[in-house]
Length: 353
Image 1 (cartoon, one colour):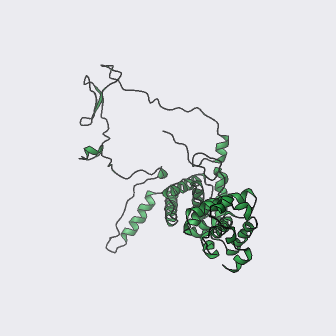
Image 2 (tube, helix red, strand yellow):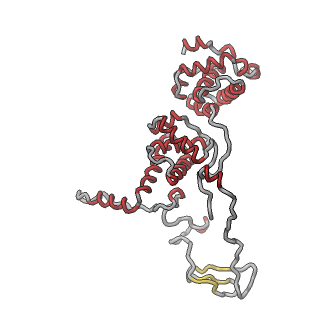
Image 3 (tube, rainbow, N blue to C red):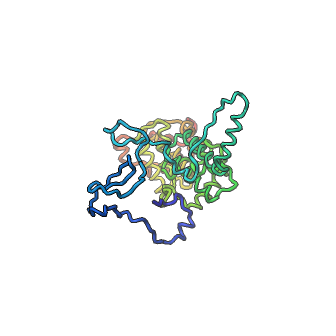
């Protein structure tokens, strides 16, 4: 069975024409030539390795392969024995030998074990395969440090493997390529992370990360929310997607998250704070919403979580405060959820942090 290639190149997707595909006919049935029953009773005799007709006993085939487990199982009530020899195959490691040879370190201090391990590693995998395994190991380690799920790790590995096959980022540092793959995987899985967060995790400069990200985005025509096999037009990462994570870190209730998202959407519709980065807008909106709902948080707490300076948060808050009548819904005030008088003046908020 043929599967679609993950992360197809943008040029190939544009120039590829519809071609007629051929597949095996799966409707072929094995019928006994003696009985000619349209619903044959074919029995697999694994003990003798024969394929026998259950009605007349005619042998239809010999030397069949026994696909059952290699040992007896007494779990008949639970169905077939799922145990097999070896671990499950990894589709990301297709074409690479997945069986390892482990050599003990106990050599009596002669140093022979180290030499044997070095020779075994060189003979088992080529240089490209070793680099791929190293990159996969680094991606898994960094995703674990960032508390990212395994799905994001798998997407990042797929993207790195495709970029390595196409030789798109030859000469770029390995850490920068891996960081770009993790950044794109987070956006496609709808758990976006900012450039600053990825740079702090991987210790890669923002310039190197941006160069690798642009190269991958142009090569594979990537859009936020697109899967590895097809592309879907989705809006870019907005501040409302960052608000949920920031509010969770600040231990704010769910109503603060929903109202803060509504304020950000209303500000975008009225063109308030346009041109500001999503991180700055998210920090300023959280500060505005906390004072509006009486859940006060300091500028330092919000700045540490969002990764922006206090001055940037105050600047966005000043823009929101000037148009507060357009951002705060009347129903919030009528239900007693919000209090416009609780919003401090921008000058006062800057003096009392």
